[in-house]
Length: 138
Figure (spheres, rainbow, N blue to C red):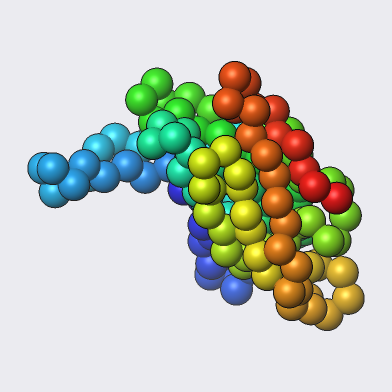
């Protein structure tokens, strides 16, 4: 999901493509529904064996606080509660996971200054009754 393409002039452009692969047949499927906000260097984690959360990341020129949620069974996207819109939460190149109903993501870099690395652990609580609702611990 997402990623970026390097153009012939050296510029990079974030992608909105969702590549799908079936490991049972060892074949690529047709692409899934495009991501609303093209994204790269994002955190990607699976919740409840059903939804894929795409958290923060980089889109073309800056970090974004967006949370985009992909439902592979229905091939559609929904919008989750964004992270707080500050350099503590917005990151690119961070790593994360979801355990139970809790999102954890750590590290990454921020676009302010000289792309400094972070050592912050961020935590978000997913509402199991409405998985688009996330309470971020600030």
